[in-house]
Image (cartoon, rainbow, N blue to C red; front, side):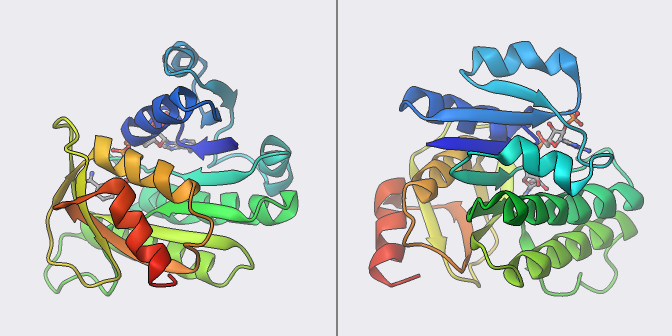
Length: 222
Ligand SMILES: NC(=O)c1ccc[n+]([C@@H]2O[C@H](COP(=O)([O-])OP(=O)(O)OC[C@H]3O[C@@H](n4cnc5c(N)ncnc54)[C@H](OP(=O)(O)O)[C@@H]3O)[C@@H](O)[C@H]2O)c1
């Protein structure tokens, strides 16, 4: 399987690339800085230079040609302000989805966030509100497309070692934390589960193995 990952130098993306390469899949990461290339190579992935706030849909579609799946794992990050929540967390996801349609790559996994899908809580600070709004709009954009999409909403991310144990379910789940290792493992498993499609899923640490968590969704017809 050839998988193109947007935000290819991100913390989740590098973990996912390692997992995919380790099981014999081909991982390609879209990155916007050439100096990130060695880290992708070390993860077993190939880097392609592409700034998703500057590229057009045809350029991105060319990078997706021949792929079996696309993962949106980019994000403006914690140090960013209101404007980049929109240009990255919303617009870059929509651009990638548009490019996937043009390239004929149907499988699309979007990393969203718990909290998306509802208006930001009253009194939220403006950057958090912009982030949740951007994630919600990115979800709405993807849901309207003719793609085999999955929207994955992790809880608060940690860099603790993965546990391999998660709760993965249709919303709402009680808010919780989840390791980036486990998020990457769930994405890898979802890429191997084409029957799970048109699904919005929340993800926190839990009791089920990653394989069982995804198998249970398949059994439920999600
Ligand atoms: N933090 C949390 O608790 C939390 C909770 C739920 C969901 N999430 C979501 O999970 C996702 C991944 O998280 P993470 O921790 O792996 O994030 P991360 O380490 O911050 O990675 C995000 C990546 O996106 C890249 N990016 C930013 N702007 C870009 C652009 N214009 N073109 C191409 N790439 C660009 C960044 O590249 P540069 O290094 O070049 O900037 C970075 O490598 C994000 O969508 C985040 O919103 C986070």
